[in-house]
Image (tube, rainbow over all chains, first blue to last red):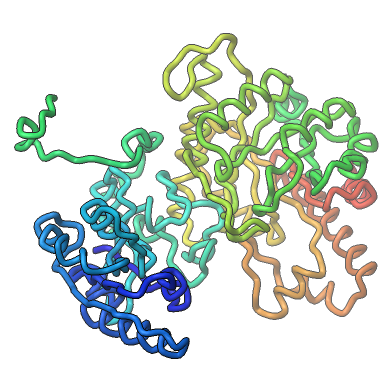
Length: 226
Length: 294
C-alpha cells in the first residue's frame, strides 16, 4: 500500500489561512491504514484547524468527508457537487488522490495534508517499511523475493557494494544489507545460480513519468493498438 | 600501454599513490607528490568525490597529473552520473590518454557533505565495467558504433575482509567476467586476511593492488569509542602501538607502520602491488617508500 505521513500542522494551517470554508477530504484506504489521512485523522485535523483559527479570533467552517478511495473516479465523482459550498479543499490522500481530486473539482484551491512517502507494508500498528519503488521491471523472481532496487539504497543489481559491514548496510548500520539477505535466501533455496549472470542496465525508459497502464483487455476501448 | 599495466603485466611490483583533489581550485598541494615521485612509482590515484565529498573533478585532476609528468589512475563513481555521463567521461578520459580506470559504485550521498543530493546509480560497478569493456570493442551501452575505440586498463574494488564473504565473491566474479583486469583492496592491516583471500581466490587472470593506509588520530578515536565503521580490521596491537601519542608522533608511527606493511606485502608476495593512501602528503609517501625499500 501507499504510505504517507501527515504534514506538520503549522504547514497545513498556513496553507488554508485565506479561506473561511474548508473541506477536509479523507481517504479510507492506504492512508487510513497508516494512520495519516483516514476518517479519524480528518476529525482530528478539523478540530485542530478550528481551535487554531479560534485562537486567532477567526471563525472558520470545516467540513469533513472521507471517501473509500480518492484515487478512484467512482468514489470521487459524487464529491464534486458537495465541494461547491467550500472555498478550499484539503485532501488527506496520497499525491495520486490529491491530484485526482484537483482534476475533478475545477476552480477550487486544493492543498495536501500529507507527504506521500513510499509503497510499503504494515509491519505492525504504526510501523511501516518500504518494499517497492514501482520500477517497471520486477526482479523479485531472480532475487529470492527481496527487491534490490528498493532494499539496497543504491539499487545495485549485481551484488553488494564494498561498504557492507558484517552483513549490515553502509548507509544505515541498523539495517541488513539487501544483498546479504538475497544471497542467503537463494542459498537456502538452492538457487544461487540465479546470481551468476550480470544483470543488464535497468530499462529506465519504461519509468518515464507520468506512467500509463492499459489492461490488454481494454486496449480496444481506449483506442490503443499493439 | 600505461606504466601501471606494463609493470603489472611484467610481474613487477607496482605502486599507486592516492592524491587528494582539493575542495577548491588550488591544485598545487594535490600535485606536489607528482613532481617528487613520478619517476619512482607507477601511477597516481585520483578519487572521484571520495566518501561522497564534493571535490575537484577526478578527470580534470587526472589531466593535471599528466601535465605534471605523472600517470593517473582515474576513479569513476556510479553515484553521480547516469550512463550517458559515465560513457562520456570514459571517452573523454581515453581521448586524454588516461588509460587506468578504477570503476566503483561510490559511497552513498548521505555519508558525505551533500546529503540532499540525488544519488544516481544508473549503473553499478559490474555493469560499468561491462560498458567500458564493450566500448573498447567499439560499441556504447546502447549498441551504437563508436568513432574510434578507447583503450582502458580496467580496475575494480574487492574487499578481502568482507563478512560474510559469499556475496562479495559473487560480485568479484561478476567484475572479472565484466572485464576487470586489476583489483584494488581497501586498506589492509591484518595481513593474515590478505593471505586467506589470496589462498581462497580462484585463479583468475587479474592483478591485485593491496591498500596501504596511514591511519589517522580520527580513526583511532573512532576505534576507541566503538564507532569503527570500516570494512577492514585493524588488529588491537596496532592501536596499542599508536595509543597516547600526540598528533606528530602518531603520524610518525602510522607512516612507519604503513612502510613496514608495504615491505611485508612486497616481500611475501601478498599482492602484485599497492595502492597507497597517505592523505596525498609528499613527505609521508616518500618516507613510506623509503621504509619499504622502494
